[in-house]
Every structure is written in structure tokens, then in C-alpha cells.
Length: 395
Image (cartoon, rainbow, N blue to C red; front, side, top):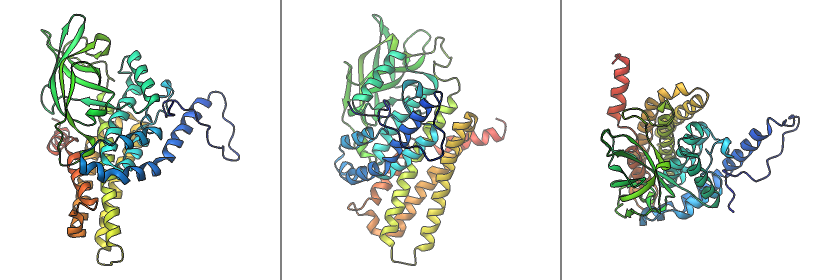
């Protein structure tokens, strides 16, 4: 059995001299923190391994199975499994830290990791998955990488998937485009709308090997090519009643956490962290290319200062959100500033390095494409700014 953070079973680190021995009430928390620390300690090696093959997977559009396995073996893919389920229970601050580092190695792997970590984190907060299904996911996570993906409704539109009740189960029909990791997912959380007289919208938890679920290898995107964002086609895919997370009354929230702001803050800051990791990798490569010159010191320093500020904003808000969920209200503004800074960093780094930065033998042009692709997964700037302005005006 592969050892993962979901099933801590490694000896803990030594105790610092003069530190009191943990009492019985402290032992579970100490063990979980030790598992978390061990996983974080493996990050540098994991990032190096991801970076070594990132260009190959991007060039060929092939899925990074080895990279995902490396993240899993390090215990990073289950870092946010809740303590009540035997996991380390990592908070948003540690999650952001991990994803920023993984983004430096391979943004596609970081994105896939983010989606899975977000599902585990939400389960720790709100127990959204039915208990039996989540136990099954944890069992699969101990055996190997168990990636979880989401098929959300299009922004501003109805779900692309419908659910109809037939013969004691839900049957899902529809097509969802650009699902990261589609070919390697263990589970999909599909947002669908029922065909009832009073339709309800909720999540349906679907095993990736279910009958009626087909992957259309249509992905040929500009960036995040290793994420293999293929289309998912559902044709009467059967989902039991116990795998549907639906509101009991149409028009009411489903059985998710009462305040969705926290979940959205996790998602936005997680993806912003990956984007900042891309920008940091781009800046590091550019600095290496320009080393030995003096003319570029100031522009590189400006880029580093701006990027460091954005990193501190995201990490700082993550820490605050862990301590006080009300801080989640600031996530839209912070992720917007982080996304702008990251994109500007990559583009200005390209301007400094010139034609070498566009050479496909070098990683900078990949970082540019990945940054462009990842920004489309964050809320549109106009939407964020309009909401912030409306709040100021009392609208």
C-alpha cells in the first residue's frame, strides 16, 4: 500500500530539546502536524521532478501520470483530508503554499492537485460527500492517486448536464467541455439540473469508469496542455440517489456548507497561488538568462518586488481565512490583484529576455501560455470589479 497523507504511518520527527512531551489530548494533533510537515518537506524534490518533464508533456499534450504519482507519493494529494478522516487537515495557508510551489514545476499538475485538494478541504468543512462514498474515495486514495474533477455549469449560464429520475436512480445526460485531467480522474462532481417539474440544481458524484460516461479527446489548447482538458460526454450515466447532493426544495441551497464564501475563497486563492508559481518560475528563468548584466537589475527588481507583494497578499489572506472565515470576503479582490501581477510579470519578463523567451527550447513561452490559460479559470475581471463597486455604492 502506498503511504499517503490520508493514512499517516511514518514515524514523527524528533522533539526539540526542552519541548514538553505531548499529552494524550495533544497526540492526534501532533501526529497530523508531523504528517503535514513531512509532506511539505518533500516539496522541493517533487517540484524538481515535475519541472524535469513539464516541457515534454506540454509539447506532446500527454498526461503527466508520473508527475501526479510523485505528488501522491509525497502525501501532497491528500494534504487537506480532514483530521476526522485520519488526514493532516491542512488549512488554506498550507494549501496555497504547496500549490504555489507546484506551479513552479508544472502548472498542469498543480491545477489537477488543486481540484482534488479543494474537494477534500470542502469535505472536511462541510461533509458534502455522503459518508459511504467519501470512505470509498479515501480507500482509493490510499491505493494510488485518486484525482477528483468538477464539471461546473458555464459561467453565467445553466448547467450543461441534466439529471432525470428513472427506475430508482438519476440518469445524467450532456456534454461538458475542457475538463482538466478527464482521462485520469477517479471521480467527477457534476453540476446538473434536474428535469423535475420544479427543477433543482446540485452535484452528482460520478465514478469516472461509470457506464454512459465517455471521454472525447478533443483537447488542443494553448496552455496547460498536460492537464488534458478533454470533453466529457454523459449519456444516461446512472447515479444512485445516495450520490446526489441536491437541495430538498427548489431554489434553496444544497447540502453544502451554509456560507459558500469560504469555498469560493479557497478556490480563488488556490488557483491564484498556482498562477503566482508560474510567474515565479518565469522570473527565475529570466533572471538566469540575464545574469551577468547590469542593465536589467532595476526592471528585474521591480518585477520581484511586485510579485513578492502579490505572494504576500495571497498567503496572508489564506492565513487570515484559516483564522476567521469572514476574511473570505476579500478573496475576489486579492486574487484579481495576484492574477494581474502574475500575468504582468510573465509578459514583462518576456520583454526583457527578447526572442530567447519565445524559443520553445526554453520554458518562458510555456509559462506565458499556462498563465493565459489559467486566468480563464478565475472570475472575469469585469465581474469582480462590478461586484466590488456595487458593494461600495450599496447596490
